[in-house]
Length: 265
Image: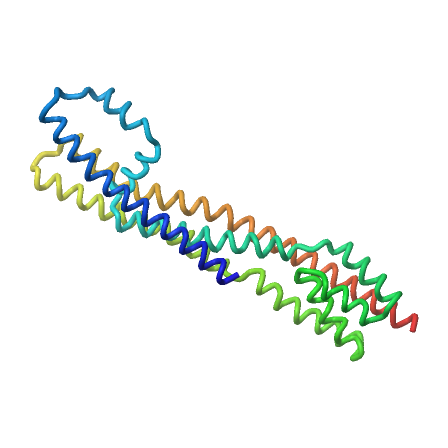
């Protein structure tokens, strides 16, 4: 899973770097072409410019990225990339950890009745997920008594719960860090906008509105990143709670099965 997480992060960073490079090149070439066109052709109306800019949504996003400031916007995008990489890894891990506990209990009970403890352990070895691992630990301590089985199940259940919650703290960090970087970029952008007003010596509505709109782009980006990652985080919390509940219910059922099995002996 660590290799998979690193792979997703590297792919995201490479894609992000290539897009930034293309955006910068596109912005530079667009600026040059617009300068040449302005010198050779009549002025284009505002409506025509809006139509031209609205032709490519991807190009507009690149332009807004550059306007928001490459440093802060890059940091916000990196938060999104690493957050999504961890989210994809957690989705795969949690889906692989999901087990049909009723079917597993039925198979373990059948194995106990037909082949004893070793047959039940073999069923657990061939089943994927934390519930099967907990069952195996409990069955492996069967000879030491039911109390030892219960302690083993509880202890190993805590270990499995920790594995399920692994890396969630990093997603929470990126959820908090994205808006923080956005607000910081906005504050710095506002300072730059007021400096521009001071240099110009005139409080022009166009100058103020333009500076503020550029400054707020980083906040928008940070909030979007936080909202996307928050959806994944809440899904993971809900998924983990469901798996832990299944683990607890299945563990109680396993102890009941072993108690009945001892009575039959």
